[in-house]
Image 1 (cartoon, helix red, strand yellow):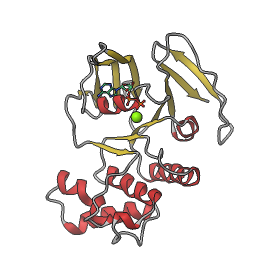
Image 2 (cartoon, rainbow, N blue to C red):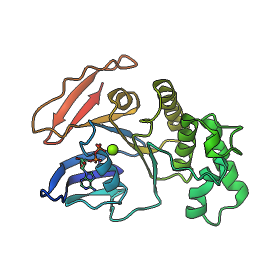
Image 3 (cartoon, rainbow, N blue to C red):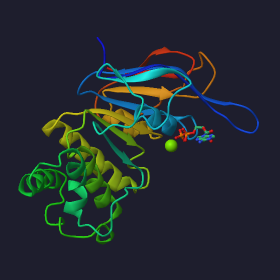
Image 4 (cartoon, rainbow, N blue to C red):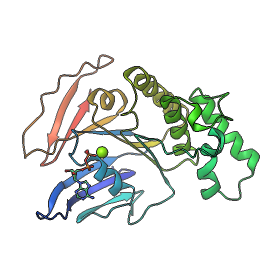
Length: 247
Ligand code: ADP
Ligand code: MG
């Protein structure tokens, strides 16, 4: 089966003064529609590079990324994104921050309809009552909830999350994992989550890919307590990616 997100043989190196720095090599990942794929790996292994490639902000040296069968060559509005530090506009209310993508993607949609859509999401993530506040009046966790709403308000084909909970304390982070799970049940979306947190990847991912940045055929010993009675098994590994099955 072909996926909605297909990362096909992606190879990328950055030019540096000391010569090219290889980061990703022949990466293959396929994410079916409405599935949640988590890519986990240590700092510096190329996760944000992968985010930029899927978002069309960077072109690979070899291979490519397809969304719904179409090659990604530039950024597109059918991709929603959220990062570690939510960039919310301080001069706008939370509601108007969430509405922003609709103003760009659906300029003819009426104000009433935009507000209804944004409020529906804000309610789902527990921010009802905070819509008229400014970003600085909210906690970090609440700001990240608002930025998740903004990332999906226009129903993007693909949601990319690059370390979205990395700056949050452990309690708030786990709260947000649950929020994200609930959101997915209400409104399925195809997601690529990038994280260095193995527990997070396993809690949220339907599929988990380990980006090890290590030589061929070495495997991580995974010792993770799953939140339920699933097991984890390494399905295969290639030079730079290992896929885990959650059974
Ligand atoms: P991660 O997000 O997993 O921490 P990155 O994708 O940000 O990793 O970076 C992967 C590697 O590429 C790191 O060694 C980083 O220093 C290097 N790198 C990232 N961006 C650039 C760039 N624009 N130019 C040169 N090297 C870079
Ligand atoms: Mg990164």
